Length: 147
Image (cartoon, rainbow, N blue to C red; front, side, top):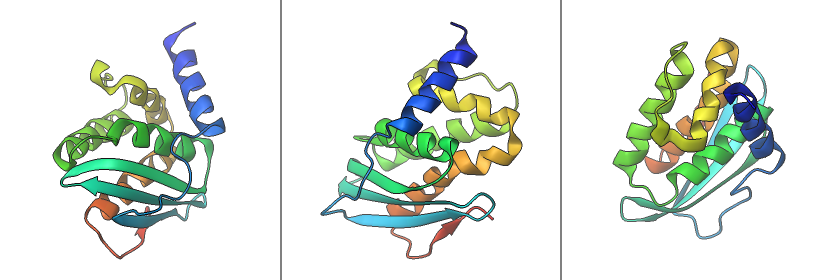
């Protein structure tokens, strides 16, 4: 099995069986996100322990990339502090927007999102959850859009 096939399998698995899917009762913050270009909509809830994300969940409707990205993101950020999450987002953004950017091995399953860079129109699908998480962490009342 080649690396692209493995990454495709990870995306398909997280789309079919998203992790951390559903509302989070007792959340400290949440934010809503929308990608008007393809209709992706999601809500991200977080429960914080100081600066650390103690729990995170999401729900919504969207394309396979959007759902898989949100699922992968929730697994990756749970237990991490805000500064670590921001650094992780910068790595993901580079991976998604710079064609042929090498995936840092520390990204683990998140590296599967690297193939999205070949489809620039889908980058917003993959980053919607990250922007929505950022709004939740900032406790921003404004809805996030990728317009």
